[in-house]
Amino acid sequence: MTSAQYNLKVQKVVAAISIVLFLVKIGAWYVTGSVAILTDALESIVNVIAGLIGVYSLYVSAKPKDIDHPYGHGKVEFISAAIEGTLIFVAGIFIIYEAVNNLLHPQSIHQLDWGIILVAVTAIVNYIVGSVCIKTGKKNNSLALIASGNHLRSDTYTTAGIVVGLIVLYFTNIAWIDSAVAILFSLVILFTGYKIIRSSVAGIMDEADDQLLKELVVTLNNNRTVNWIDLHNLRIIKYGPTLHMDCHLTVPWYFNVNEAHKEVDTLSELVRNKYGETVELFVHSDACMDFSCAICSKFECTVRRYPFREKIEWTMENISSNKKHTTNT
Image 1 (cartoon, rainbow, N blue to C red):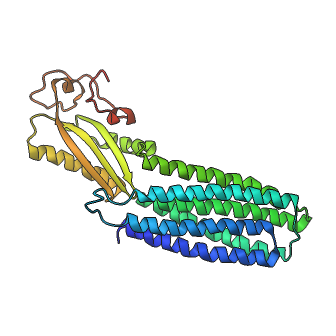
Image 2: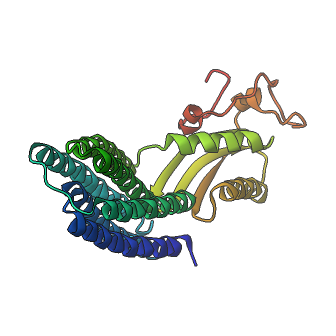
Image 3: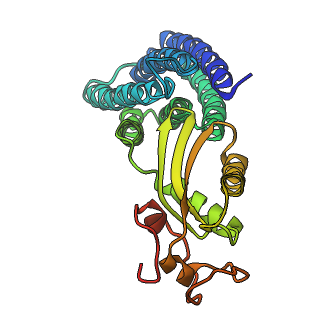
């Protein structure tokens, strides 16, 4: 089973659980008559819709490449995440509206103890499922699963806030507490929605992933060989779970094709060991120039023309540049 197929399987389970939890919350509202619980139940409708959207996006993302989509269908995950983030943001606004309305017009509540138990169970399940989604999404580079996981966790925080409010209400009969707590945790939902939208837009616009580049730079610096004289023009594009990377690798000018290709293979294997088989790496090999001698640590080179001066430490900035490095960079 490929990572894309596994992502789809996980998302199907998430969608099914979301439907069950929504029904449980509706049952809790029916038993108690609590507007706060109704608000939480209505927010769970977003979970259901988002879960189904996630299933569809991962289904499309898992399709193999074709003539019309030579880089695959992974970009659909960014669209899915954008829709889900928007739904989360709208849900946060709606919860604030309902909480304020309940604050101004409090409703009588019945069988609050049962309502607290049922809603608390849904919060625990949501948190567990959300954590699994995030862990799987990070492992398989799936923004759709990460978005679903963040959504479920944000729902957990909202539900937890409502449970706290209901517990305090149960013991104190202070009616405005549950609405106040719901408003507070709705702000968490709004922030989560914003972060998901921001991430999806970054993916659609092929924005550089600073965290990914930082990790890659550390790996390259720790494993570079004397034949890797320079590395530049590195670019990374995300297509859902697939990472497309390309760069220019400078090797000694006297290497034949097989020798240069061996260095490319070593670099490719290093990157794939770090990020898995979902990486597509395209490396262009460059021949070193006279100015490369100053940064080349291949001291046994018999055709060196200039002395070694200093080793250039690779950074996010200089490996992303399209210029070859010299001692003046």
